[in-house]
Length: 120
Ligand code: AMP
Image 1 (cartoon, rainbow, N blue to C red):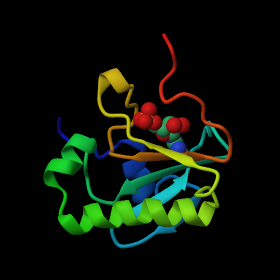
Image 2 (cartoon, rainbow, N blue to C red; image 1 turned 180 degrees about the vertical axis):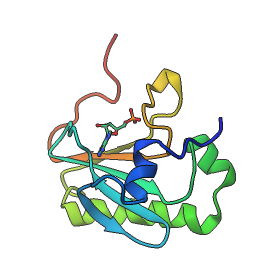
Image 3 (tube, protein in one colour; image 1 turned 120 degrees about the vertical axis):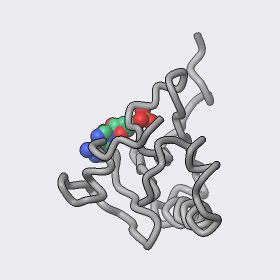
Image 4 (cartoon, rainbow, N blue to C red; image 1 turned 90 degrees about the vertical axis):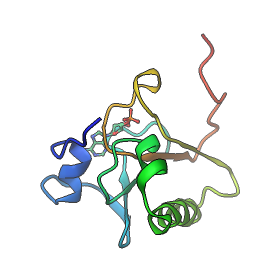
């Protein structure tokens, strides 16, 4: 799947639409989800053009991958959710209902997050 440079996170990265930024470094941007599902709901994204986790895992550099993982840990600590617990999640493709085609990791915390997946 080709990268769509008009997706909403690409536009946030270019500064064309605002976001509630909480973290930035050379490889990573993190901001609050516009429709939070828990008291802490942060989106952590690479600055590079990766469609999905699959794309990122296959083609990102070791430096970009390390930066994203370190950032997630740092943000969880800064948000104060390490002791209470938190969840990270990356929806990938249709079965997971990935809506935005720029790889992103959700970080949820600040309440009991319930079962890992909804029961069907
Ligand atoms: P996903 O289903 O994993 O692709 O999730 C996309 C997430 O992006 C959803 O939780 C949306 O609420 C969030 N989102 C969409 N547009 C924005 C935006 N402009 N700023 C912050 N979060 C957004």
